[in-house]
Length: 116
Length: 114
Image (tube, rainbow over all chains, first blue to last red; front, top):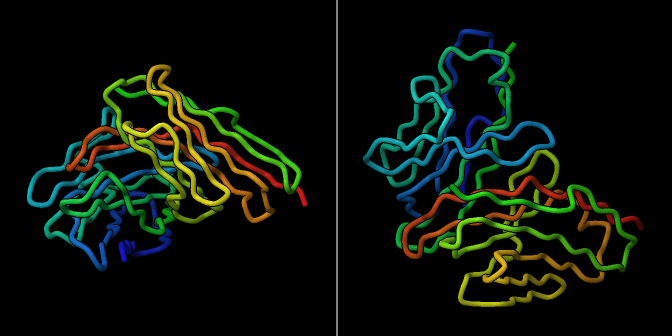
């Protein structure tokens, strides 16, 4: 149990386009999901906390209008990178916490975004 | 906010030797400390975790110790194998029944030489 999927696994897009990444908890309900970005050989940097049915909480320095997060159901959160630029190229990883569970986070496989 | 420091950034050991990675945290309210293993291009995998009401936890070749007073915790891997080679991250978070956001260390690249 506790499987989290992400789609797509990789995407290449032109500068200025928007890209949507989906994060799904496949066999459990997740009231909270987290979105991270990870640059090569660096740690996971938390971007935002996504709570089902409410607005996401963004970390300092993360533009909420650029990284749109929607958590419409207990099994799905989406991250949309709007007007992507080459500096947005990164590995985006989501994680999900079980509703009523402890702090353990279950990570998705990540999405490699390359903006040309 | 929470600040987590991790050392060393790289660690190379001979197969069969032990490896120790150390982390310190700043927020005394943090009460959950997981360790993750991440292979290149893949998701982080939880390998062991410890809560603040416990001083030590062991799972086969892997153990974690926590010193709440000093605000540091360590990962110990014994009898290392080449497949242990990966990047290891420590993290700290707070919260009991609600999901608390985690602050990650910068990672340790472990290389186990056969």
